[in-house]
Image 1 (cartoon, rainbow over the protein chains, first blue to last red):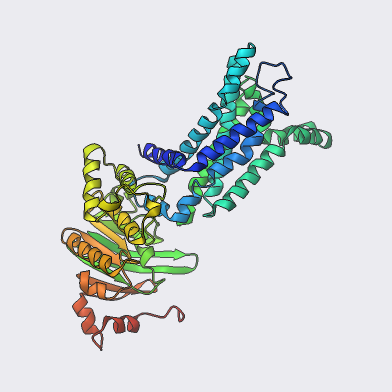
Image 2 (cartoon, each protein chain N blue to C red):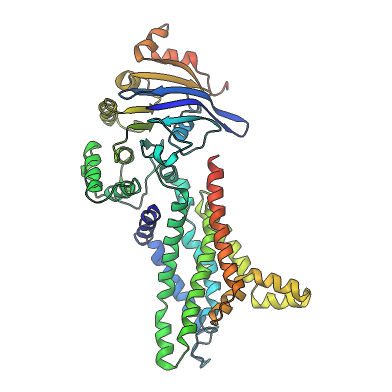
Length: 243
Length: 241
């Protein structure tokens, strides 16, 4: 009940400010630039969006998700409104869930607004729409994962810029550190087990397997465990700050 | 209504509040005095359930804030020192949000919001965005938030800080009026406020109560008949601490 109240307030805060619109527009522009250049959307003559469009989304999300999420707890700490919420009859979990879900909703909107590219492939070809839906779900899950990391970092600091830098750094390390180019380096340098363990830390393996339409247990574990650990960590940090 | 028993708070090795005990009855306005850093805000934060105490307990209307925090919190209205608000909301929007968190809905919520807007003289800015408000209005908006659920206990951390003399007078009158039916604990640095609004006052220094009494008793205790002199006598300079 209270989660819903917090959720409504947060969501209206996003959309009464330029920040959500700015991030959504930048996201749309960047994701389309990637699709039409590196993705070879026109030339590939491939009606599935997996490699032309979805493949590049983690690269865009690793910076933009922290940019949208940097205010999550930091702003409440800076303005002192967390103290106000802390003296009201609601649990900190409602605050954490409400804030997380509101920011996730903004990302859901942003990701769904790329729908023209889905219409386009259906106009020109005959894609597997089920796997495109899987692509959208996995892009949303990656956004949620990065968001939970940003939420966790924002509980540490009242400074939004610090939060942006640190959380973007973590997301960039996770994403670029396990990018294809590096994955090949690891494969040469380490034993296959070690190399695959390192690659499994990043989003690519889990993101792409889901985006290709196959849902594996280890991918669910990756998404759910990072999100759950970050949310629990956020709650722990907030309690520790008050003790 | 407010019973504080042996409340203690330690931050690392520093003791901010040291076995503090006092109580406030219904119809009483207790002034909470003390130098900066004496532990006034920390005490208030513990009573309102924001900070967990290191030891001791605070009871609001007989409900322990440690054992049954949600119930205890529903009995109290709190105005934090900095009067924190959501700058992206309007005054009415903010009050509606707070009322919803307090569990009010429908017409009860609408009436509560209208009532506090009237009580705190916010009619002129009701639909204005909070980030355009002056300090006096910000303070009163935050005070309005504390009154939404008509709490039996009010805890106000420097409610007149940063207000102009007219606004100070209004807020003091408001505290006095509300104090007839509620238990109020409020902190202040302005000693004449004690005489103007309080039925009783305590002075805390380094986490302990050093003086407790009615304003008249306090003045009698001071050799020169001035509260300021008494305050300076019983408290330590922050440079000496």
